[in-house]
Image 1 (cartoon, rainbow, N blue to C red):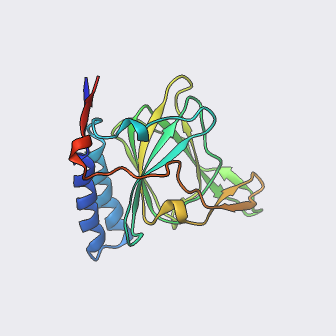
Image 2 (image 1 turned 135 degrees about the vertical axis):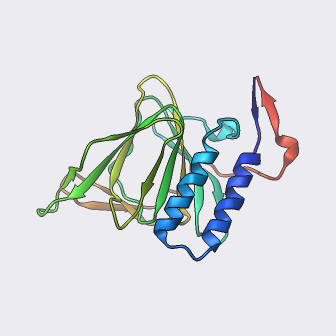
Amino acid sequence: MTAFHNAPLRQFLADFTRLIQAPHGQTEVLAQGSELLATLIREDNWLAEEFAQPHAEHYQQYLLYADPLSRFSVVSFVWGPGQTTPVHDHRVWGLIGMLRGAEISQNFARHGDGTLQAEGEPVTLQPGDVEKIAPDVQDIHQVSNFYSDRVSVSIHVYGGNIGAVSRAVYLPDGREKTFISGYSNSSLPNLWDLSKEKTHV
């Protein structure tokens, strides 16, 4: 029996809003924000099942919260078995926290001839791990579900409304194709409706 409740997410949003409101630069936001996200993903009893549902053909990106001033957004990424992203960028800072399963992140860098090549070793995120991304460091990567036989779920925090940000996927020759991702869900969780907090068997 697992109890699902929104209190941890509500607390995270309150704490992150206070962090964003303070006069911090990107480095401090990522440092303190990663600690807040690590606290959120320490327990796996708060994400409602509807925001952890995989799709048979591609990963899902469920919006959990969008700051009304577009200062940050919180998203659950749900990976079906063996699913992967194209090589892509973000163009805003981000934090990735592993909640269930595992995922692999491979960074890419542009070479002098304009092509993209894998940069460094792939990083495997396990439950409780948090990874930082920033547009002025290494913003181009590809992410995959570590598992070929089970679903993985990660929680992402971005420095903007990521579903509305114009960014790019990359071809092997370095050419860019711009896109705006949107979200997989058409409705948001009501974090303040305590009557919907329930226990699932």
